[in-house]
Image (cartoon, rainbow, N blue to C red):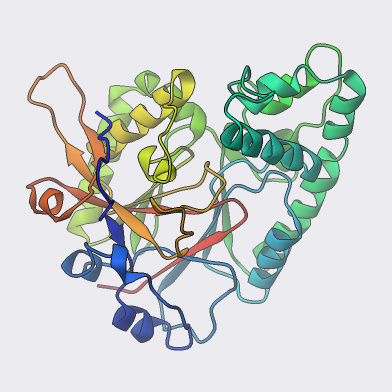
Length: 379
C-alpha cells in the first residue's frame, strides 16, 4: 500500500512561474525546478493553496478567499503576528486545521524530544515512541510547569480570532489529536495526579467556537470542503454508510456546479514525503491507522486537493535541502481488484505514474505555525 522510493524523487509540483506572476505579480520567489518533473498540464488545472509566511499584497479579484491555519499548539510570536495581520485583510473563511491546544513550554520540550530521537536513534529517548509517553514519566512539578500556560495561550489566540471575526470572516476549527480529550498529549502530561487541567476545547466552546469532531462538509459559492478531524480518521470505520453516501451526493452536486472539492484532514496525507532524506523507521499502531484511513477517505471522495497539517517540520528533499513552501506533490487514487479491499492513495513519484489512468489529487502541506490561502472565482 505504501510505495517505497528507491531512486531520486521526481514528484514535486510547483506552481508555474508564469501562473504565480499572473495571480501574484508582486510576489517574488525562486523555484527549485530540478524537482519539478510534474509541472505543466497538471498544475495548469489549478494553482492550489498558497502557503505563506507573510500575507501577499495586491491580490487579484476573487469571489471567495480561504485561509487555512496549520497546527498552533498554543502559539508563538510568529503565528500570532500572521493572524493579527489577517485582521487588517480578513478572508471570507478562516479554517483552523487542528491542534490549537498547547503551550510554548510544551512545544519546546516536544521539539527537543523529536529532534533527539531523529539525530540519536539509540539515545535516551529511544524507549519512547511518542512525546506523551516520555512526558508522562516527568516529575509532577515539571508536568505542572508544562501545563501552567494553557489558559494564557488560549486566551491570546481567542483575542486574535475575535479581531478577524469582527470583519465578517467565518471561523471553522477542526479538532486535532491534541484537542481531543481521549487521545491528547495533555492527558498524558496530567496523568492521574494533576487535577483541574485547563480545557482549551471547552474554553473556546464557552466563547462560541466549537471544534468539529466528526465528518463535516462546508458548502460555499465556489467550493465544497470536506473536514476530517483526527478522531474521525482514527475511527473511520465508525462513520455510517449513510453519512458517506450523503457526502458523495454533495460531491456530485458540487461537480455539476463546477465547484472545487477540497478535503482538509488532521493527519499526514502521505508518510514517505516527510521522510525522503533518510530511511524511515516506519509507522505503526494509531499513526498507521490514521494515515491508512486518510487514504481511504481520499479514494472514496476523490477531492481536487487535500490540505493538511499534523507534521510540524518543513519538507526536505532526498538530499536534505529545505523545499519551498510552494512545493506540492501528487497522490494517485488506487482501487484494488480485490473487492474486500478499500481504495487508497499512493505517492506519484515520476512521469510514468502520472500517465497511469488513475485519479490525481494535489496535496498541500501546511507546516506548524504557517498559513495557507486559496482564492476562487466563478468558473
